[in-house]
Image (tube, one colour):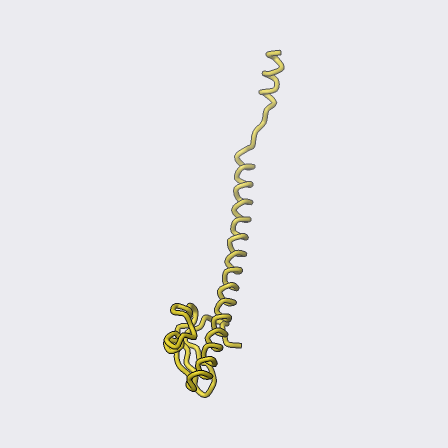
Length: 113
């Protein structure tokens, strides 16, 4: 019986250092792929949020014009109650002249269209 246990211990094999290093490298590559994939999703989400914000500002401008008869800037839209304070997160300024909306500092790709 004791000989059988000794024989089993002698034949026992574990992972070599090379095998462990290869597993670590593979896990690192997979983690890198996931990080870059998630980063792209976040960028698309921010762009979609910006486009939605631009449309909200355009609707608020038109509502303000319909009620007051003039166009105003972002501060005026907040003061008149058409936007909540802190609403513009991606657009730092907006002005309307002759019925066209002009945005100040929107991110690349974020337009009213």
